[in-house]
Length: 185
Image (cartoon, rainbow, N blue to C red; front, side, top):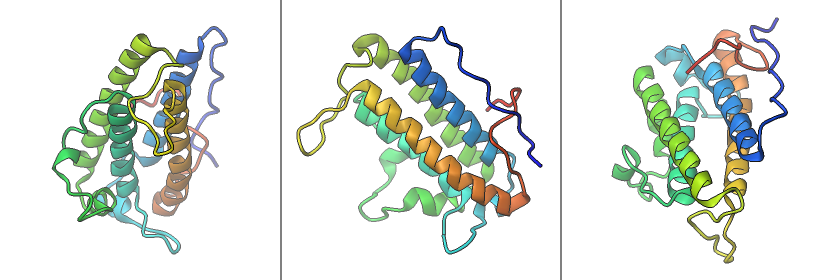
């Protein structure tokens, strides 16, 4: 039996930028619901042959918010805590420490990253539009558009929400398609 309610349809009157941000927010909300309210034991639990934890997922998506939207889209610095990490020496730092951090610290890092991303995405869309360039170039010389970056971020959340589905069900049995309408994070 599912604890969730069906996801509402997006209003038809949204423009493309609002539609993209709406889908990203729905994915963020579902990810938040899948990973919320857990104690340290549940955030550290693994399942099957994977070492992935919900705590690691939370910290990883916080890093992706910083890397993909702050740095690569908006051209800003990583900011704390990422700028103090030597990822060359510890490439799985967010996964390793996410499995050890207290729940309140994990959620705070992710919430701060999401809030920063929301502000930066709004700023970048206003300045560049969806067809404008991101602030980085791929090694082959292509520069993704703002739209490309938002679509990739949506895909990142969708993929990791699938991981969270499995880990959350193993932790406490929570299953469902999406966050209840009144769920906030």
